[in-house]
Image (cartoon, rainbow, N blue to C red; front, side):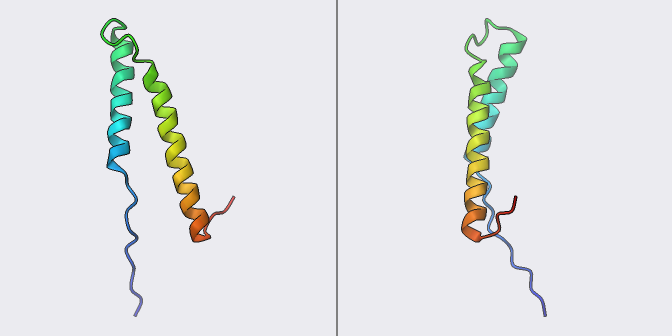
Length: 69
């Protein structure tokens, strides 16, 4: 009998929270620059988060030996 083994979830809710803050800051900046003058920094934060997530997934696949180009 084949059993499906549930893979441990690697979802990071803290990263989702940071991503939400970045998106909200960008939206507020676009609605009215005076509400959040530094809201454009959310774009930089979003790129850093994306780099972290991509690198973490890549490192996990390399450890497992499942990385493929």
